[in-house]
Image (tube, rainbow, N blue to C red; front, side, top):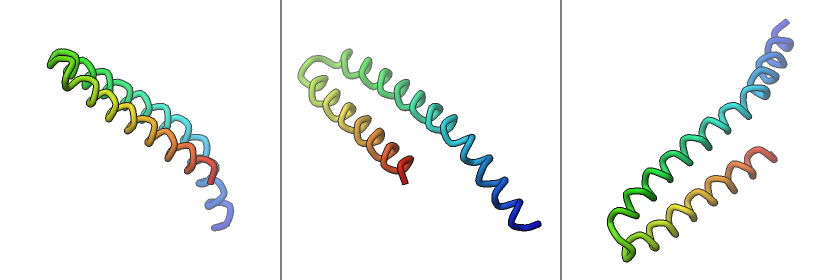
Length: 71
């Protein structure tokens, strides 16, 4: 009986994983847009470096997410 519960628990987490990935991705996009707007308001000298750093962070998070989903 204990073995069946573990399989059921893994199946439930397997179904919920894509929902959490979408929720985290949506939060990252919102935060990135807010930060980009604030950088845009500060001027072009800080904006380009900040956008580059934010874009690199987003790409890094996506790569890590894809690597963990493959494992």
